[in-house]
Length: 178
Image (cartoon, rainbow, N blue to C red):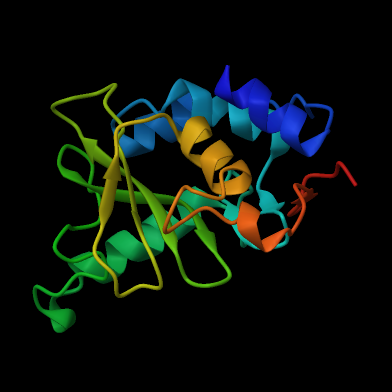
């Protein structure tokens, strides 16, 4: 339902991208949210409304969530940085554990993540924070509902961008569609 709303909001035809989700989920050690996979298959990675970055699975490119996750995990686990995490008070998700995986962001440095707990597969609350310094806000809703509210609901504060009248466009990062 929410994925369809995002598609209608952007007036785009779904791309129908094929992805080896089993390999990706095998590396993560948990299944990804079904609606996220549906969003990615429809859009690919790219930018909504010229400001909301949606990470997908584009090997080695800017909009690849797996590349971003690997880099964040490597940094989180690097002992020269001590116990400090870029997603404090959380940690970056490591297979078999509990932590954050980023799936989106904005040009204003807002971050959108899932809180993944390997012991609770199928639960994917969205954690978001504004400008890298604010507190984390928890949303017990799907990825696609959160994205829709960011794009279309001016009252969805502090993350709604509809009041800025940026339009509801989508520009693919690397997998065609334009």
